[in-house]
Image 1 (cartoon, one colour):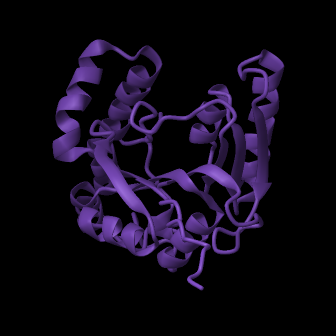
Image 2 (image 1 turned 135 degrees about the vertical axis):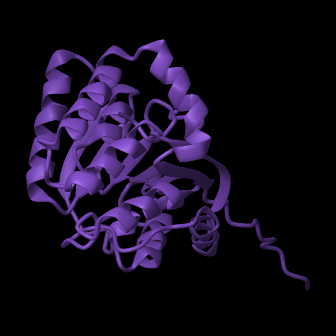
Image 3 (image 1 turned 180 degrees about the vertical axis):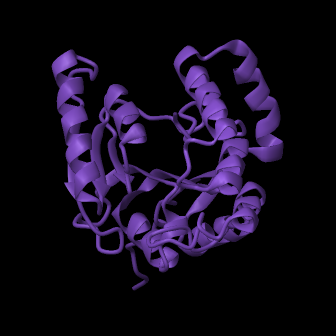
Length: 247
């Protein structure tokens, strides 16, 4: 289940991509399939081990084209172990709402992104997320949980302050918003409640079968209750300076 829309965020074979806070690796895997040179970074060692296993399995199965590379590594989003201007593309999906110093994370992403490079940022959308917080304290009052809710203009403003130039936005995963509302009502750790189990089966069916009906329904509902807000931006090239000086 991808949150970034690669029709709006084009990726070229050979692009060097950083999936920052990669989690289970869903975006990193897609970039690898598209021929990118991928670095998947997360502070969770267990998840990184799983991502590395999947990268190896994808290579063995021939799922990635020739020239594509994939590396999974532990790392700190506030102190990235890469030189300046190392990546053509940076993706950070459903991560910034967890990090107290979100401005610091943005600054690090901009540092390692090449001038002219592209960045995709996704966070929980304000409205659906606000409902989750109202329904359940346990949803967000956990170690490593969500510590803020972004309004779209606020996130775009912080991206501009960091030196990025946003060029597009959209919402995603409308069908997932009711699932999380149900989880908040019946208990975020309670997967046995009948409404939660039934809705989860619907989501799994949708992901596996990709029926036209749910695809159309989600497209229609995304502007209204899409659970994620997605923003795309570029890092402008430095202005050219005239090296000549007057005599």
